[in-house]
Amino acid sequence: MGRVSAVPIPQPRAETTADATRRRAVRSLGIALLLGAAGSAVVLIASGQTWADGSAAVAGGIVSLHAGGRDITGVPAALAIAGLAALVAVFAVRTGGRLLVSALLALSGAGAALAALIGASDSSALNDEAARTTGDTAATVDALTHTAWPYVTAAGGVLILLAGLLALRYGSHWPTMSGRYERDGTPRAARVRKPSARPAKATGPAADPDRPEDIWKALDRGEDPTG
Image (cartoon, rainbow, N blue to C red; front, side, top):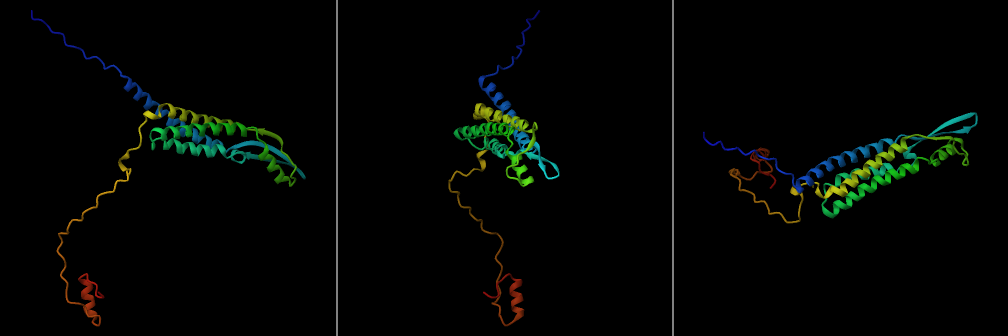
């Protein structure tokens, strides 16, 4: 019997360190984009909701008072917009600039969360509303209660913070915007106009400005009868 040669079975290629780093970078990029976009949306929506309720005594009864998040503090919404801009800018810069923008993203999330937590127990906005409603500058709000929206806003800020931390850790491996359309300051070569293959139009005799028919004929030929 003839000898049967064994066919080698191809083995799967072992994952290199570069492959593992690239895979983690791609995964972290998707997670950071999701966290940053979701966190900014949560902060912007939640900061526009009612954060505090109360009442004030006026002549003839009691009036209900309400204060929205942006009446109490506009910091979370402003930082959410700044964080969203930083998330986009991460892909437009390189090296040191990317590190700086990533830090700005993380700080925006931390600041939004902290401002929301501070505003969760704030009563100054409702006190001002009570003074305007009653006409008494010394009036304060009664039966003050707070909703859960400040804490939802803080949670959105934490999501932005996590996106910034991911950018700080893995941002150096993320892709950047193509430099194809970026100008490097090198002067461009002047474009050479190709000679036209169209034959020049024959010009007729000069138009007599006192003869209207000559003027119309010159216009038909594409000439300036006044030249």
